[in-house]
Image (tube, rainbow, N blue to C red; front, side, top):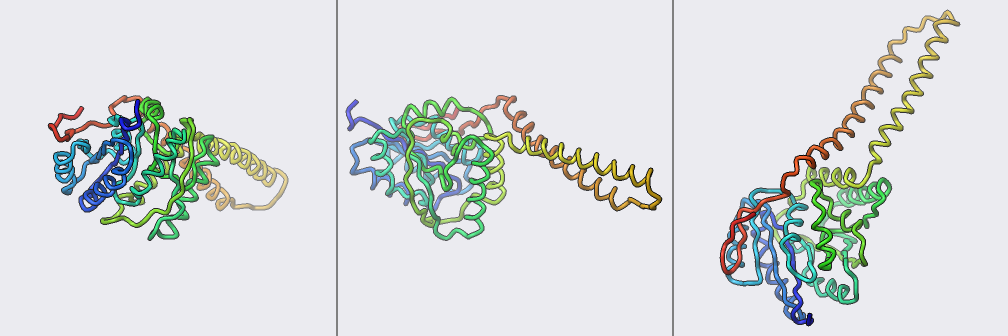
Length: 319
């Protein structure tokens, strides 16, 4: 197929981004215009409660290159990304956020690496303007823990701003697990991969929707999806405490049978019960996380469903 006929799909999940969408659209069009490719811009509205769907409908009616997938409710960022990849038709697909922290001026750089033969072009965030030291520290610790616990190595600072070749997208779309950690999935999927570093600017408008609660859930999904280490740690700690309990029992028997010391023992017993009880509850909690994910998988419900698909020609009912 001739270069001029090749299509780049740009997949953008959005959630309450009414103040960012128009500027983002203009920047994407500006940076795609000089390139020898056609493109489609796919917005996935993840259950927004502001004017985001109305703005997307206006853009879709004004520009046939824009498609808007309106999800029936909020399914989360990773599922919204998956939805966009399912619907993308391009020879290469770029996934990015619509708040301008994934700079559209990097799109030509991603495409250039793809033209050089790389099938996954991953961006690596080396810094983010305006982000606190604490958030940066916890993010770095997460990636270090993830790489120690898992056989899948995820690049520290990796983001969901990347380019995927068509064959990679087709392979990815076969992965349908519910607890989705796409950065780990892409790292594990193989193919020829390369990296481009960038400094993420501040959001163009609005505030981040990625709360501490969402960050914690995201971290748990990443660790439990690619590592059994927490289960093994609970097992090893249980064995160690079992040996410690045997030693403590032998000490109690020795004092009782071979000495005349009056040892009340209540402090030791209380401390032992609290320690062992806490460890048991922690182990049960870890097991519960894995069982909960098994429960979600065996129900075999769809990952998402759409309320509507908006294009210039017509509005289609979602599937």
